[in-house]
Image 1 (cartoon, rainbow, N blue to C red):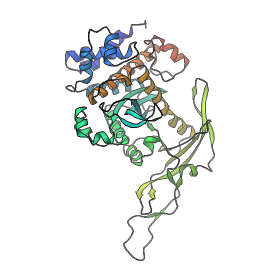
Image 2: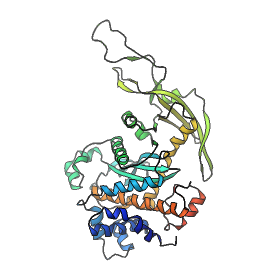
Image 3: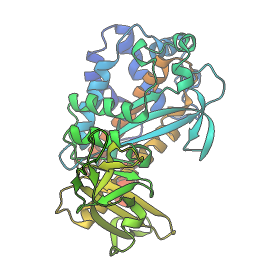
Image 4: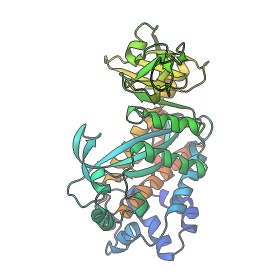
Length: 419
């Protein structure tokens, strides 16, 4: 495709989105906003985009992205459908993570001093819970929802001023937001075989149980101190000679930390994909266990939960990571490792959303503006993935040097690939 031809391709690709937008002005400004995100320019906030696009002013773009008078839920539905057509299926994964947007001031919705992953420290930022659908290392983000810190949720005045919907003016853990978003994208038709998440989500027993209750196969990170029982543990009901009968049974064995549980297990070197410098590999070990995540007993310990895989990873850097996964009991160690490592694609997607499509450039303060800007960034990302895959003449090519070369027809700086 000749350089510049992507605008005509974009018009056709956006037709389903425009068809559900109702008002002619929204149908006019939506493609303009996406073009501004995809096109050249250092900043992708409203004013710089308007100038880059040669508009006489930025008011119309600003109104399009911040107006709470129209419902963008149909666009979110279509985004999931587009993403599913590109990468969905039983061999796809849904990656749960979050991404931080550094921001100063106190009036922008959700800004608080909290951990900022891109800076590696606590800083003033907004944090978005993200969902990325991916297959064969090709990601398409399909969900970005703001995490509202407790200080914000408790301040009804600030929430009202920032336009936070009433149903979101409450304390919600990131894991709770993630489960709600999973329900949303599944209802919208997203198809995937497994869910993966890092330890920020995997540490929550409620999150893991929520995934299992939904019938999902998952693999999540955990801290090395996560207590687990051997599968041989049994529950018994000792009889008390005096006092009330026990309400809960007692485990026949004590739990141990994940790190200790794998200490005497055989480790094996496994490669999961080819990187730019050759095969990526680490040492892995796996053991069937029952996490200590059931009812809490009087001495502080928890009863054993359902049987799952405990997986350890020893990286060449010396770093050690631990995971739980509910893959079938006959799952190969190679399958466990590949599933765990499939999470990395979301980091590439987050980087591209920020560096190429200006996810973190929005300068407004409102809930609606932030989420709609994020939505339009994801729509732009999905279009770029569609464009690259179309140019290859394949539905889902594997990534690598050839794919990067094929992406050269995409607008400069916008390969939308998972390198």
